[in-house]
Image (cartoon, rainbow, N blue to C red):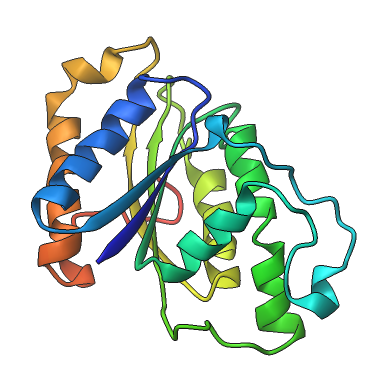
Length: 202
């Protein structure tokens, strides 16, 4: 089991990272191989809509996304952790998502299959400061299309409201334990038994 864990917050050591680290802890304890990637540490561009990937099947931009493309193709589970900014994900996550256009071109323009015949599973970890209804709906909708472009499928997420100030998540030990338990289950249980919110409008 290979897990690619994307830390999409611009803040180091904040609530999002603490939650993600709990999932990673559980997964490692069950024997998974985990690659954690803090996007804010990378140097990469959003899509520039040049159209070159339509016939090349790969992105012409040469930056830190190169290794993330390789990591994604080798992963079984992609976990994206992000705080909610204006009812959506962070700009780091948006840029990461946009670069899946190269995979979309391979799949839908060029008719190529996943090179390793994998169907990666996509999972979201998201935190919001408000009580807002449908707070995570936009994030879920976007990620579904991203996973489809990458020959994968979105399977659900863990979503927590009313977490705002740095460290607030530490008072929500049940949330951290849920993430830790999910990390173990990714390795030890079949996908249908993973304890996820599978709603399209959480």
